[in-house]
Length: 367
Image 1: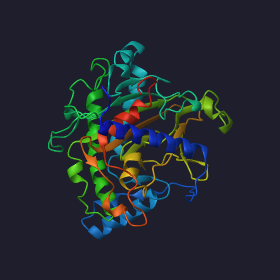
Image 2 (image 1 turned 45 degrees about the horizontal axis):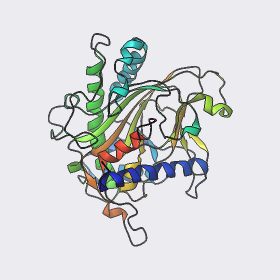
Image 3 (image 1 turned 90 degrees about the horizontal axis):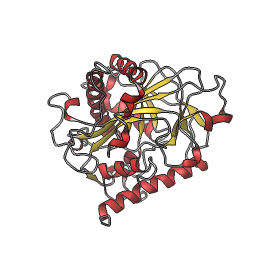
Image 4 (image 1 turned 90 degrees about the vertical axis):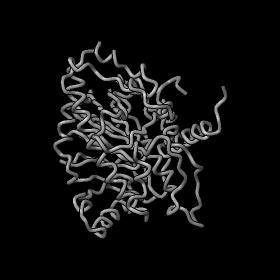
């Protein structure tokens, strides 16, 4: 059966981003360059003063139109982040190859479960070489959210009703406490994401609650990722291809929250073609704009190319959460980002379908 108009538009949008990504990797941009990533203290954003919250939102705006990345500190989840990094290490160290194979992501149509090294290529551009990372992926399910946080109307990426078997979990006996630990992390991160969306709204001259109706049953994909130690402790930039943990890419959803271990590896591409190291900042979470939010803001906010190259003799662990709006939400360019000088550049699109098509590009034969 031939694809309908919605599916055709979504696939076109996914392929359009691939072209953008290839262009950014190959060419320099006229956009002003950056050499550092700002650190934003989130504590004032919890103030009862709207003026104070807007001051934080302004800092977010400045970060989003330049680097597209920023750190947040004093977010209140420092202990949770530390525990989740420990949980990530346990997953990769304690499960046997057979136990990992039993939850291989090939068994999930939503790309969830265990992801072996080199099973996917994050940007679909084969020229970048093999990726050394291995991962575990999961998505929203009712049991992972605190009671009363969502409206119970969640749908899967393709718009279908929730599939209770969509996530592939290791047996509790093989990894005691794993599901409970993931729930603690995921539920707290969802709450933080909703808080950040209020700040994004203020930063875009929208009412603070503008995004709330669109995050009542949001899509949010979580990952545990392990990057092995470099095969050469003195890895140089000359052997990037050999050491590439995760290829140059942009994220798909609205924004990403990244918890990372002390081992460096994340690098962000400045418009002048220089890779800027996003060194771990103790107690921080990295936030970056993703492609859907760039589309939604009519290109005002920047979804910046980044990659992971572990150049150290230590393993690196990271736990990203890719936050989307409700997967069944169909959106068009935000009114505050459209003007006579900058008319809408993007047609309306459905959130989940777009993410699913982007994911399909990462696995050979899926698209």
